[in-house]
Structure formats: structure tokens, C-alpha cells
Length: 284
Image 1: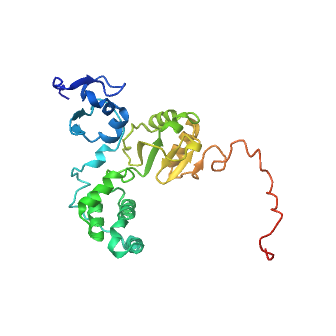
Image 2: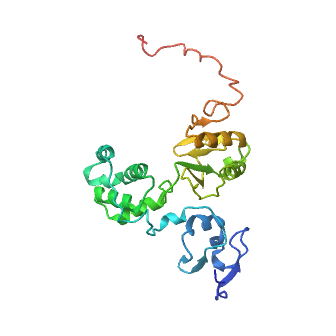
């Protein structure tokens, strides 16, 4: 990446985050624009841009932040281009009709998310052809469908493996149990994969995700639609070996506890609750 030009009038040189060694020009009145949070949420897809009409912001390309910025753009590839036909199977076409029937006729475009999800489940990922077919069925401009598909990270814009491993690395999972960083390193070492890679046999794809919403059972890995929780390095390896044999274990906590109940068992409310002592109706 070529070096930045000298700072212009009204700009100062700052580092974008504590992990970055590059220097960037940010307008003095807008120091908050230098926050890592803004960096992650607003500027991932950008190289240069404007903020509040005057502030020049430069995204640091030296930061290795695992995100879905690639999903905001499309480049034709041999397995993802508009010349590849896609149509819902007869069985899924019935599902399409059932989904659309839930919405008023004039608002059938509201079915765009469930139809994209159905297309991804059939095709394996949300290709440009899947999006175009959804746009045709819902009588929407294709760009409106592209906007939805590129906004939600659950729509995979590239092919993924048979077992899509989504390791949660948000704060509760980093702090819970042995920590998500240990689980992630265990997966990487056991499968020989880096984040964002797919195994040569097409069986595994590994990614990091933000908050799986199962914080009480941290650390957590989502495998396709199923959650495996309360993980340790040992149970993670057992899980991966089972997936290699195409024998996925029962989803849920790998520690033996039931859902999110206390690991040590109940300590209060051990019996049936007492009767209220009165009845609202005599026949109850």
C-alpha cells in the first residue's frame, strides 16, 4: 500500500488503533472519528471517504480484522456468476408459495429474507443467481435484494464447507470457561485451517462470529444451525472428530448439564410450589 500524502491543512496524523503502526490523517475537530468502534462498524468496505462533509478518514489496510467486508461486493467467479441458472426445487417452490402467502399481496417483498435463506439452504450459499431468482419471484429490483443479502452476515456470499464452524469470540465467550481464543486455536490446530479458510475436502469452513447469543453457555461454536456449548479443548476435539465421521453429536452443552441450568444442580426451589390457597373458579 503506498504511503499517505502529507497531512493537509486542518488535519493531524494519528494512529487508528493501538494495534496499528501506520499513521492516518484525521480532522482535529472530529477526534471521535478515530475510534476503533467506528473503524470496525462503518469503514470496513472503504478505502477513503468523507465524514460529516469534511473529515478525511482512511481505513487502515494493515489491520487484520476478521469481518464480512467481502460480502458487500460481487466479482464473477466460475461458481458464482449470473450465467449459472438457479431455480427452486419443486418441494422448495411449495415452501416459497407458503412463505409469500403469509404477507399481503402488495407487501410480498417482505419475504425477501426467508426466501434468500431457503435459496441458500438449497444452493449451499447465496450466489448472485439465487438473489436474482428471489428478485424475479418477488418482483423486486435486483439491487434491493443485493442490499439485503450483503447486509446480513448469515447469508454466505461464498461457498462454505459441509460443516460451517462459527466460533463466537465476543467478550462473554472470551471470558467464559477456558476462553474462546483457546477454542479457536484448538480448531485451527486440529483442522489445519486459518480463519476464513475451507478444508481441501470441502468438509469444514472456519470463521469467527460476533455473539452467538448463548453467553451463559460460553464458549460456543455454531455448526451450521446447531450450537455446541460449554466447550473445552478436549470436547472441541471430540466434536471435530465426530464431524469428520459425519456423526455429529447431540447439540447443546458438552459439559453434561441440561441447557443453561446450574452445573452444580439446583440449590433452591427443589419441590413443587405450594398451592395458592384459593380458587378463582369453583370448577378448577
